[in-house]
Image (cartoon, rainbow, N blue to C red):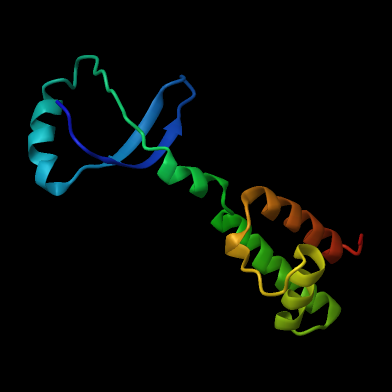
Length: 127
């Protein structure tokens, strides 16, 4: 049976297995479930075609966790040095990224890691 599905998340298990959570279109779900139920007690072979191009850029872009860390560090630096937060963000972007009008959401995951390290150094008075 062949059907389209969207990968929601995956997890690598300690046994080496891979657990996939997929989203199946509602219009296909009943017929797919009827077929899958017949194989619950048997090995199931799955062939997957993954469209990598759509995910390539997403994989390289800054994560939500990194954005949250940067925003929190901006706030901590502003409080520590008694400067307005907006002014702090503008100064730090200009000093560390070379532009004050750059959006943090537009930097790569790697750039974000380096930026966070530098922000933490400033917060801890290393720079």
